[in-house]
Structures are given as C-alpha cells and as structure tokens.
Length: 214
Image (cartoon, rainbow, N blue to C red; front, side, top):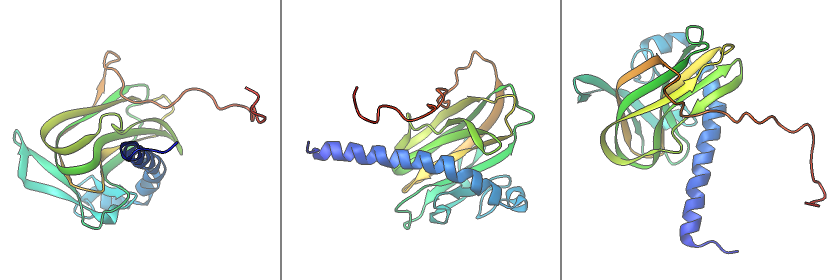
C-alpha cells in the first residue's frame, strides 16, 4: 500500500521519536559514567554547577545560565541547538545515587519555555538498578514543541528498593531553544500518579509461531 505524504510525515516523526527514546535509554548511562566528577561539580561546556551536557550529539548543543530570562525571580538555564544539529539530541542533565530515595515515589518538575522547537523537547527522568533501567519517562507522549511561554511540567516515577541511580534533565532534538527554571526534585505520596514505567510483561522463554499457523 502506498503511503500518502501525510502518512509518511507521521511515520517519519514516529521514527524520530523512537530513535530519541532508544538513544536516551542506551547512551545516557555511558554519558553519565564518562562525565568527570569535577565537571559535574563545576559545570561543563558552560553547564551550571552540578549539571552537564550529554546526549547522542552533545557537541551540537550549547547550554548555560541565561541572566536575561527568569521565571518569577528564579534564574534559568538554557539548552540551545546549534545550526550543526541536524540529527540526534542534546540534554542538560545530572545524576546521583538513589540511596536516599529507594522505596519512594519521586517527582522532577520545572517551568519550561521554548522557542523555535520544530521537533520536540521534554523533561525526562530514569531510574537504574546497576546497568538496568527500571523506570523511565521522557514526555514522549506530551512533547514540548514550537514557541511557548513558561509552562509547568513534571515527571513522576517510583524508585524500587534495589535501585542504584537516578538521572534527570531536559532534552532537545535538533532545533530551537528551551529554558528551564524553578526546578524541583522531591519525594511525593502515592496519591500522585506516576507518568512513566517500563513494561512488566516478562520476555518469552523461546520463539513462537515460526510457521505462521495463527
């Protein structure tokens, strides 16, 4: 069946989102491990202290504190795509031990504004157990797009008792600028619904229906 132009466009956007999700899942633990501790302490690539620039194409993005853009008196940090950002994504992020948060529900929230985001951006958070990702949300189903004024967003996840690390930040794919302000990370009650999970269905023990009989 031939795809119409609209169908091809939707398919292309879906593929880009899927690639970004996979890249975020696979590359960020490596980026976090490779970010020197001293860089995280003082900020690297212009990043504010405690944050660092990562992603699949971090060199195609710039970041820093913007003294000319505040939200209700709170300073903001920006993440901006350079003209060279024709593929991949960048993220302004940080990570830390899960020790204080195990067995708890946590919320990462911030006020965000955007300018010229033609692809997508979003807050994201993930929880790891060793090298295994056990909870994740990157706002893929509610992306930030276009040019917007300050809006409040949040990501809420459960931290399992055996979790080892928490990662969070803001991601931007290929174009535009996003600003992040009034950032909060806090423990919340179970009355606050989670925004993302990982599939809990176990993998099959072996192959099935190789002859296509049903």
